[in-house]
Amino acid sequence: MTRAKPWQALLALFAGALLSMSSAVAAEGGALQQSGTDLGDTVSLQRGAQLYMNYRSGCHGLQFMRYSRMAQDLGLSEDEVMNNLNFTGAKFGEQVQVAMPAGGAGKWFGTTPPDLSVISRVRGSDWIYTYLKSFYLDESRPLGWNNTLFPNASMPNPLWQMQGLQRPVYGKKDAATGETPVEHLEFGQTGTQSAAQFDQTVRDITAFLEYVGEPSALKRQSLGVWVILFLAFFTFLAWLLKSEYWKDVH
Ligand code: HEM
Image 1 (cartoon, helix red, strand yellow):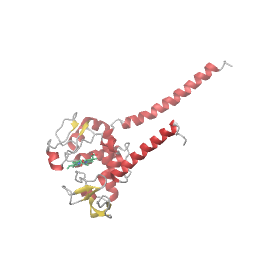
Image 2 (tube, helix red, strand yellow):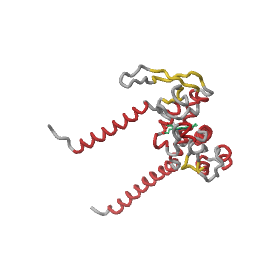
Image 3 (cartoon, protein in one colour):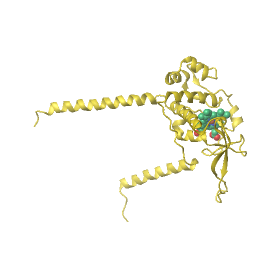
Image 4 (cartoon, helix red, strand yellow):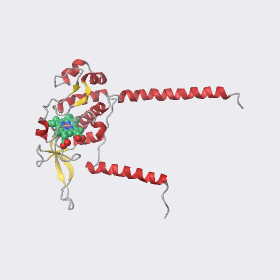
């Protein structure tokens, strides 16, 4: 039997790691939908901020984001932020904290809603987008809601009025696990928005959380173009200099 070369062993290890990562993602809840967010779309970020602040209803904080920073990055005035996005009475320079009393959440939801400052970096935008679209009615759950991407999540669907009510269509019972998987979701009652409008609503919220996860991303991207241009120009200068130095050397 021939022994694998070190580079073959490394490649196999890398492929194995990739495979287990992808199967872990798949096992957690099936296919993700593409969020299609655009951090360059300031209007989408502004809408996302408004929707997020209105619908999180004091459940989730953004402990690394200050109202003043949000105003600066999203092109909003202090008055606009304080009147439309601040419901906790916090000062302009303070972070976005949770309005709910400490300890209350654990009692009501069975778990404390996590701070969402870096959730987009942990879960990814596609995950958040799919999660917010995957709630369905489930009478067996304490709050009457379940989620196909995050089974048995303790969060109620905050966007149901816009989305409508989704009901599950179950598949065949799995003999091994004894569970009956949800095959797909269908609407039992339509919401105030069309499917396309609701997709945009969820995209805006997702884009806002993506921005919160890395507020300097926009600056970093625009700066990146200048850095590449500088490097290209510098390479050209270095090449001219080299040609000048070496022109008499034969
Ligand atoms: C637009 C509004 C909201 C967004 C974007 C949002 C987003 C999220 C996300 C992404 C998670 C998953 C966190 C993780 O990976 O563990 C989560 C969990 C949770 N959310 Fe929300 N949420 C919103 C509104 C709410 C509201 C209004 C409540 C309370 C009434 C709530 C309660 C919870 C709870 C209890 C969890 C923990 C779920 C569990 O671990 O089982 N959320 N939320």
